[in-house]
Length: 420
Image (cartoon, rainbow, N blue to C red; front, side):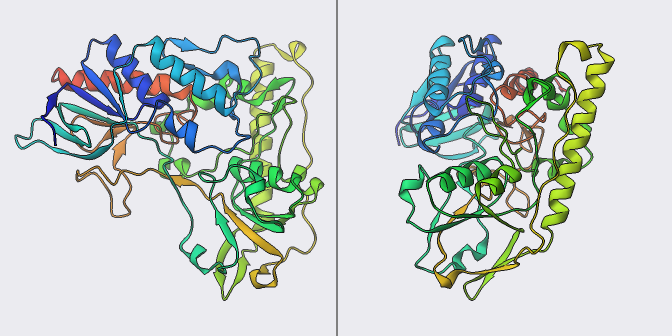
């Protein structure tokens, strides 16, 4: 290992969250470096499928001191657009990024007054560490994935690029959040029959009353709901991403659209036993609950519009057909029959913090933190779902999150107790 270097703060990760924190620390005159194992915006470059677009429209693509300024505010950034936006941001703010540097360990210094960050290019000593390496580094698949027959191809969204990589034949897509329904639609359009396993999900129209649904989510304050205002924050952090897709025609993609196209629906996949996939019987309940929650959201939007005297400025209220389900939904699927040739596990993601050698994990291996303030002095976490607000997992959520966490960090360095 090379000679150690000193700085006040080490930010691990040069994605949008790490760069947003770099801008905040720079504005506060706090010395820091950003360590990135690959290139700026690495996960956006390497871990997205070919047709990927953001769920949020361009008018919400903003970071501290930087925002989308193109001619399509209601459009949706592609993978290449996102990389250009974030890489351009790094240049605009002149972030002190060190690329090609892999962090191998974070541990307390011997004196207990800070941290040592080991890398494959030498060590850094610092007072504070910001963990901004991403909350979606690893795919999360159930243990019973190992019971899928060997002749069936299994893929996850981080490795999937396009339907042409899958064998011909049927595809079982497990998971019906944004990623699951988008991949199901794309794969089915390629001519491969798709069956999608559906658990709890969030149904949402792409547009409502002539505006993007994200416009209304922001306007009514739903995206600004704070983590400390929610009774069950761990449950809230586990809620699936809304069933949305970003397309030029701003189409709504929900279970009805999938079944209209010919996809088959099953309930939540409970296990695989002797090569037979066993599904729960709760599909109707899950769909009814999602329909009800969407209805309540639209009621709230309508009430906000009326209270603001805006009814005459937007189109009339709309309501949507309930999720349509077949009268007889099979509860099992024999994977040995040859009907299914591949399985796509769209069952979520988790961070890879295996290099963090600090006593900050609970018995289930989850990082202990309070809105990104980690349970270790001077350590912070960024990028997770509902970290500090409902919008935390979106690019534009990084601005408010990093503003508050940078203030907390500055107070810590000054020896001032700061509200979390």
